[in-house]
Length: 406
Image (cartoon, rainbow, N blue to C red; front, side):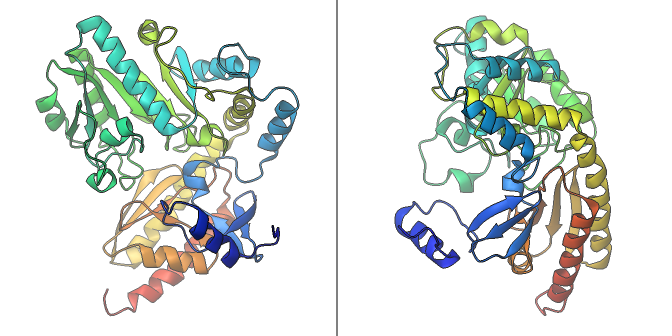
């Protein structure tokens, strides 16, 4: 086997041996450090995708490497039939820094949302009976690609071809409390939503919307689930996005930045829901292994103690201000929205040509929806790195402006 494969060879082997479920960019990355990554041919890229909001501490973080090395020499996996110290320590850390009282560990955001759905239904079944099982999600939402989370996702293009979807889900319009109220009858056990819709195009809640949702759920004895898989763990400039809005959920899901690249998810809830998840009610073989929880604990401690959440706030404000300047310069940009270091630039034209041009110039960005450029850099990003991307965007958008189609 040739260990010195070049970009083209790596890509051709992937085409030969792997399911083609991803629309990949034509680059094979082999190394990363901080906010930068390199391909097999030595080309350098400034990363504003961050593993899709995963690499909060950047690539090859010493925090991660140190925790990974130390724990890998001690204990990697024993199953959840036994107690392990790193898992308990991480659970304690998350509870002490959130609204929650209990934590369930799993391996991904989709698994965390599956756990949330199961907990909500189990709790409602025990309290109200089996007829109270319906879950309301939002149009344009994204909660995962397993069958339950796919069924809870409000995007038909993602659901296409997988019928029959699971029953028991309804959809309301995001930022429209009236549409939620109209479908919240006695069969509804929970509402699940993203405080900021990430895959839906970086859509933020209107002022007061989340409080109105919380009040409605409380009034109807309906559980409120916040999917913070993409926006949690400091990305918005607070540990959790819902904290900006003065709203507390009953259940919250986390993943992505929780492990800075290692596979981990978590479902957190208040104490009143805890009895519904007794022994045998839900489980996972790999969820919360000593290895991943030791790394996650180190990541969370660094985010909380080393100033990176504050950096997300200050760099996010600066970054958004720079992008807003581009809005004033180019009339085919509709707006920039977001909070902290989850930002979206909505164009009046498709975004793919901009993404491709950025790649050619050494910058990684992507689209959330066809015409929304999304920026999810590591939370350690610095002003100079933001400036480099904005300067490149200015050049690229300036070239697009000369295109007769715009």
